[in-house]
Amino acid sequence: MSKIPDYIITAINRINEFLPEQIKVMELQTNIKKKIPFGLSGAYDYYQTEIFNIPFLIAGVGDEEEDMTPSVLAKQKEVLQKQTGLTPIFIFQKIASYLFHRYTQNNLDIVVGNRQLFLPSILLVVGKEKPDPAKDPEKVPALFQLMVLYHLERENIDGLTMQEIAEKLKTSYATVNRCVRWMKEKGFITLNGGKEKQISFNFKGKNLWTVALPFMETPIEFVVYTPELAISENSLISEQNALAEYSLLNGGPYRIAISKEEYKKLKQKNIYWDPFGEAGIEVWKYDPTLLSDTGVVDKLSLYLLLKDYEDERVQIELENMLNEIKW
Image (cartoon, rainbow, N blue to C red; front, side):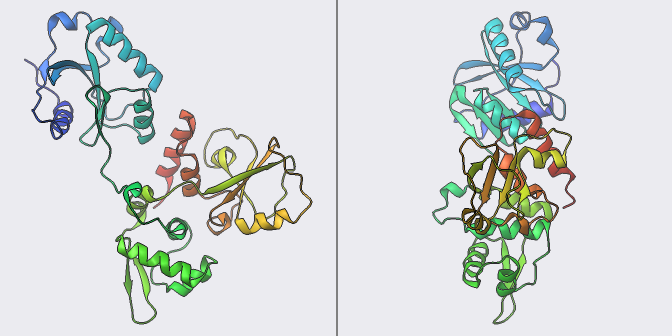
C-alpha cells in the first residue's frame, strides 16, 4: 500500500473538524480505477473515502499551485462522475482566491489545504477564517478605507493627530474622530499621547492590507455616462484602462474616476448626460486624487473595484499587480 500524500491527509483532517464521525482515506479500488479515462488517469492522485456512508472519489493535485479554469474542472467532474459513479472531491494545496470563488460558482466539491472547504454534496461550506463585516452590527466608517489606503500607498500617518489627518484627507475633525474610535475598538490602531492623541497602526504593510480587506469595498458610489470625453481635469483613468497601465492587458471602455465634489462641479456645466454615452464617469466615495498623482487610479482601489470582475485574465493581472507591490 502506497503512502498517502501529506496534502491529502491535511485536507481530510480539515474535513473531519466539522463532521460528527471521522472519515478515512482509502486506496482506490481497482475496479473503479480501471474506469477512469486514460486522459485523466495521470492528472490526479486518486483515493476514495466515505462521508455519511456515501462513497466519494478523491482527486488530489500534488503541485504547489494549480490554475485550472472552472469550465475544465467542471467537465472533468462530469466525466469522472459518469465513469466511476462517484462524486469527486478535488483537493488542492493552493489556488488563487478568485479561482476558489469561481469553482464554488460551478458547484464543485473543493478542499484547499487546511483552510477552505466547499462541499455542496454534503452541505458543508467553510471559508477562510477572517472578520465578517456582514455580522458586525456597527457600520464600517466610510473614511476607514481611505485612511488605510493613504497610509499604505501615499504617506505613513503613524504619529499624526486627528486634526492633521483631517487636513491631509480633506475632511472634518469629527469624521476622523469617529473613524479613529471605531478603528481603535476593532484593534487596527493604538492611540498615544496626551490631549492631542496620535495614531499608530497595529499592523504593518501587507499584514494591514490583509486584515483590513474584509472591511473594504468598491470605491464607486455611482456611475454616470456622457458622450463627451475628457470633461474633467481632476480625474484619473480607471477600470480596465487603469489595469492596462499596470499590466500587459489591453484597455477597455473609457472610464474615469472623480470625487463627489468634482461631480458637483460637472453638474454645473453644460454637459450632455446620456446612459448610452461612450464615457463612464465613476463618482467615488472618496477623492481618488488623494491616493494617486499619476493620472491613473491607485492599485489597491483598482483591486477593490475589479476583484469580482468575471474575466480570468483580469483576475490574474490583479493578483500579479498585488504581488509586485513593495509593501
